[in-house]
Length: 388
Ligand SMILES: [Zn+2]
Image 1: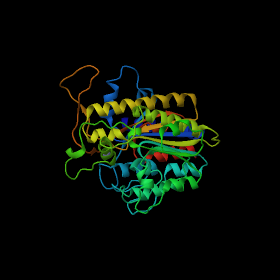
Image 2: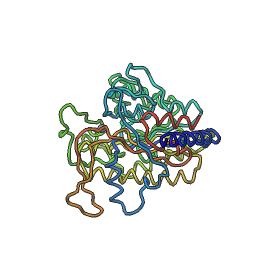
Image 3: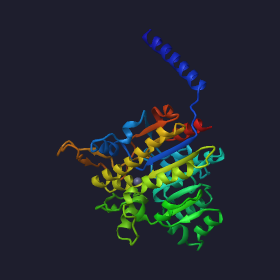
Image 4: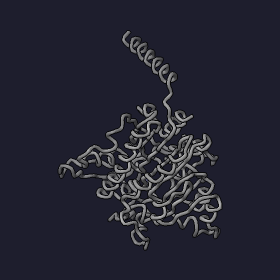
């Protein structure tokens, strides 16, 4: 009897919710998709307990959980995780923007373009890395970076800022893809100063890796157990350590400043709105390296970008902000021993990724759709449902 009453009550609630949803669809013109690579609950907690003031996460009116499996493992890598978040389809680990049969998938960024929206990509790693690549590329191996760079030139994005110049100019086919971009009407900038000062509506910034993120991790990736994936971001972080790249005076401010610049350009003359994906890539690298200080500092940088976006969304009510991760990295936990207020002692259970659920935080127009437990593939579907 009790079960029947509950059943009837829940059916009524469902009918009511359906009626409400169909009655008034929230007006979503702009979408900002902020992805913390490898940012699981341990990473978020490390920030919450070490910050005195409210973090951007705590301003989220809606919170959900995302199950991050790939098509062929409970534990996803970044290409398959990015593909799920970008296209709404699970694929095999290693695959990027294609399904397990190798068929090209259509990302939410492409769909936004079809709807007449401007699009942008801001990353603190190479533009050809797995997470941004999932939004425009289609390859059966993430390591085909020269193919991915070529596909980037066909992406149609209005604004992109990241690193990875070698993939565009130092190529086995001898092509100069910066020339290709210029032919397609882009302004191409190779220095931070040019990106910061441009008034262009269509540009690509391909900066030295040392300008887009810190690279002062003490550990290297040699600690990863055999057979475990070591992310490209982690390798790049280690490689940049001994490179001769010229550096932005404060690469820790890159992500927030590049984000502000992209928002400025995309919101200018955008009569149909825009879609902007931002990736904070190096949280994952510090998780792989089991580097607690690096991870916390990276989360602080992420938080500054997030706070800025929360403020932006509050001032632009037709904007939806969705924040999540492609997977958790490092099996990060907080240690009981050695407690010191404001200084969390992190422990790690692996040098690889884990299959635990990751958080979803949503703000602004349409945020309600992201409450509850979902699959990684549900996120782009929900976004598409809101902007169509
Ligand atoms: Zn990784």
